[in-house]
Length: 509
Image (cartoon, rainbow, N blue to C red; front, side):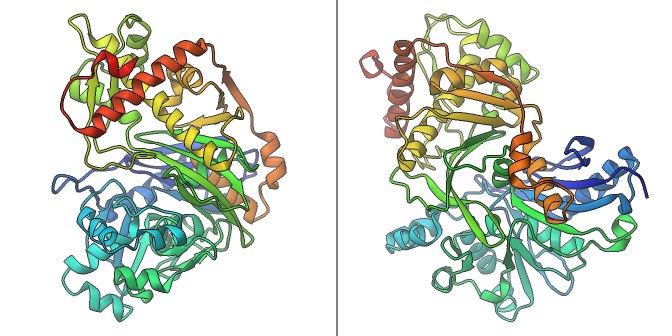
């Protein structure tokens, strides 16, 4: 046994799987990562290979341990964080998936959602779950699998199948099928859990025709989730923490006080505002969700989802070919012509909160003969700032603090861009704090697992240890801020209207 002790954080994301070892001071000791294949069998369908995910989890965990010179005896516990809503169903006897996982981005259940809306049940669903009736969430994905995979419905009714989000699937495999459980944050994203009780709701199950024996047990984010099979890492290791990726980032950013807000900028952007023990019902089409659940106590949040954030930079690189690396987008934006008002509405897969329009598509406004890569790159990055303001205003209005200044804690790949963070601060008219530890999602899962076994400090001590690497303060004049945001709002309105006509000057001044 080594003198150094660790917590292993498994971060299974949409595009990659990572394993990170954190030491006793919650510093990163080793990282291993493997990319994840994306499968697109039809337009609007997105799938993942569950066996590929499982292999990568084992492989990256072993790699990280090897890099740190750590053995199983040196690992205090394991925390798991995962892409939420992605849906898996497998055979309890064999552990074999009945189908590829249906990814959170998948839109195949749009028709089912439309039928349910026409049946007038969305208000009941939202009242119980805090969610909107959208293909984004797991419930309709489960219903699709049970309907389209031969024999699945009867097998589920007989208790021969198991459903889980990715955390639950990994937990099943890690424990050799001994534990079929999930945590309350992942369960809250299924359309099936009552947000007021953290329990599966019978009426919702009947509404979607989902058999109860299919579902995992719901536990706290920090809990006893069993131990790993000894053959995986040499000896059994305790699994003691699970949280969906955005909730794990909220924990990792130490947003434990009501009113604190974090935003994670990856492929999309997900912002959460802690509302404490008060479940806030949004009037702005935000989501009510759990921030975390500890010792049976639920802490709630308002959440807003942007479908395209870093994906806009990927479009600059892979779609337009005007950059080779993400960092170059900021270099181009700095050189953009300030006299041009080019606005990108990046609705490549529809618009998320607060618009929730899955059918509209992206548009680029304000082009002139002088428009070039610089202006388009600036528009792509600036669209992230505009969308962040959309979310922040809606969430703060729901929270009842629309006129109060806030501080936004940020993480994710895009926060490396100083230009983008400064523009977010300018458009939001609020301070933006970038932490020293950018791996906040993995850190949140690690703290949950480490705190559960007594290896990491209490919530108060953890919060006091959070440190800021840089604060971006707004510097844009108020008039210019509001002028630019009005351009965005007009561009969104025109995009949602689907008129196909160009944006007139009279629309944006």
